[in-house]
Length: 366
Image (tube, rainbow, N blue to C red; front, side, top):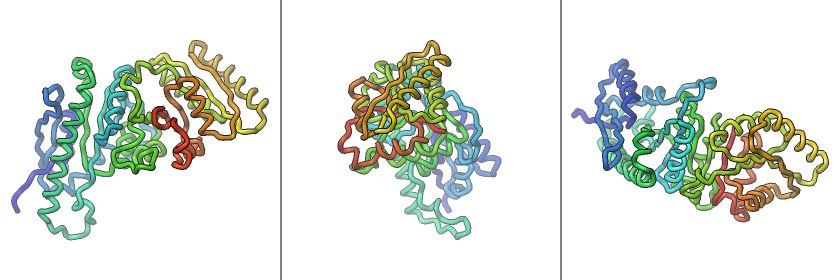
């Protein structure tokens, strides 16, 4: 059979060298090819190429290196992860992610995962019949992905000053697989300071408020996730002044507030703890809110924050109204409050709210 090379992944040079050593340790021959994703050659990635016959043996090596192992106690790494699917939502997320990484003095990693080729889903025990059409399809998919990625990066760099981009030296990862599974796997072994992604993707159904990949990452990862709508302002971070945290006076809320205040400290913004009283004992809620204010003032004497109480039986609409009336830039929640998240993202409620069209959501986890 004639030997044919396929691209296993496009990585930064250090990661490509690591992958090559891992592949060669498994007896898999590979080749590295430089690739300019940007037209002016500002940044360079490396394609890792292998013979197509080695694909089934090579992909597990790649996925293990990029995260498909369990490491729940890994230490956070100093970078911001931005998963992209080339949609307008992910372009906005990449632009904001770059600004956040720069502000946090962190690296930005842009991550894209393309659909897995059909022949890689054949069970290991089955005899493989090499269908040339499958490999041609994979080759075409890889070319289209590379072209789209190049176009995406050129759009992104046109929005960012050249010198800033050179100084930041973002890293790129392009591979095949299942997007949400691959992102979560990568996060488990390389936990970032934050994930920034579009609240929807290019494949989201018209009636959905949140894409399936974004929802999967929000509910299943352990790091903060900032989900951005496409309509977020281009200079969003420069105008980032106020974040509201929806609290229900649970013990985990104090932990989340601690993480939130530490995370937003470099941005010098105001944090508001908001509780919506839905017809319960209002005096008790006021007392608990005052207790939270005193505890936070004692622990963070120099932080800019406030605690507010509103009365409404309609939780999502109350939050939306508060955001509109107070020019809130970010809504912060925890996954522990799944009832809030579920109700906010419910399509039936969505028609009544404008919250999701322009307010970024920052989700913390237990």
